[in-house]
Length: 227
Image (tube, rainbow, N blue to C red; front, side, top):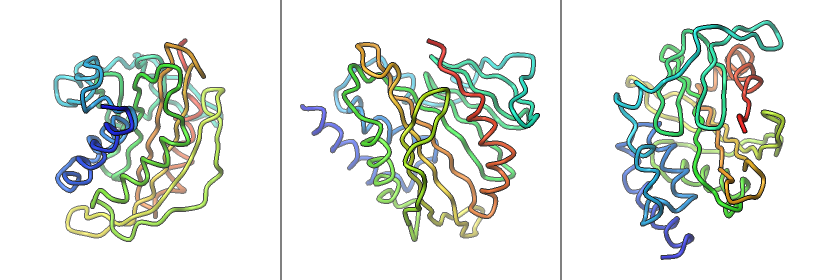
């Protein structure tokens, strides 16, 4: 089966079952859809496809704190090929090569997903576009609308593609308008060892500006590639 046919069947699977999925699993499967690994692709990603309590035991934050511009202090998480800081009161949920940082009180998450992408076969532009399409078709979000964002941002000294949207979800019986921001890049840019890095930010729209200043911008400022 071709990579493109495989990606198409995975997107159909996501759309059919997304209404019963945790958000973190939907985000992960969006990335797998882009890479075509879930329909007969490489078996090395089985750990990443099954987030759970066992995976959380592999968290590796350092004991100390780092300080980013603006004086915000973060704990350092060292992942598979990257490091990133997170606020001390946020929960860390690793899953294979990927990780989700969440703040339950604000219903806010920032996820970093990493999958192999030899020779940059999948572009960051394709990744963010198909990812938003999958979010829109998942059934999780009502009144889904694209928003205007700068097409690129610099994170970890590298340019990432960026797109965003808003949509309504049910949280504790209430409809909440959520802001969704997707970033993607290939690193290294083009080699047999290239990986596709994606960052997903999901936060209630009413808290977006405040949490951008206090959490998301400092976390993105702290992001580094380790090789």
